[in-house]
Image (tube, rainbow, N blue to C red; front, side):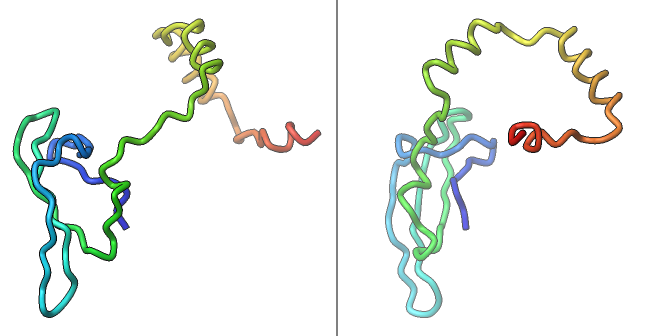
Length: 108
């Protein structure tokens, strides 16, 4: 089952991009929901046919952000990740012989 609709360029299609929506009813076989859209990134026209039994309005809704205001503030204070930090992280990953089980440490 689909969780989102995407343009050929990879951009997620949202309700604001939809130009036309309708039903394509067939005598035999499944019926479809027809979506015609203009991509907000590449500006090209496109269309999707989604089986009616798989259709949900949530396919066209933007996914919310799970980050709280406190977390967002902490991330902002940390600043951007530097190239040196990425290199050090990569070196530490290379030196691991096994993956640590962090869940065991939390329960202790």
